[in-house]
Image (cartoon, rainbow, N blue to C red; front, side):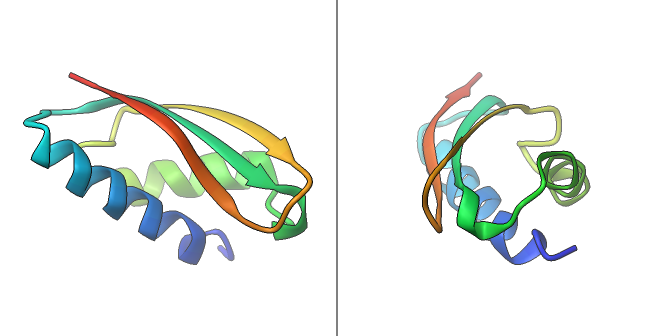
Amino acid sequence: MHETHLIEPVIKGISEHAKKEGAKTVSKVRLKIGELTCVKEDSFRETFQVLAKGTMLENTKLEIIFFPGSRIEVVSFDVE
C-alpha cells in the first residue's frame, strides 16, 4: 500500500480542521491527485477506506480528479 503515506496526512489534516469547525462527520472529500504520484484510483480508494475506519471520514465519499503533477491537493470537503 504505497498510498498509505499519501493518505494518512490527508485524513489527519481534514479531521483536525473539521473538529475545529465542530463537525461530527466528513461526508465528501474532493481531491486532486498528480499523475506523477503513480497512484491507481482503485487502490487509493480502497486504502482510504481502510485508513478512514474509526475516524470522522469513515463514510466519506471521495471525488478524485487527476492532473499533471506530483502532489495530492485537498480541493474541499463537506462536513455535517
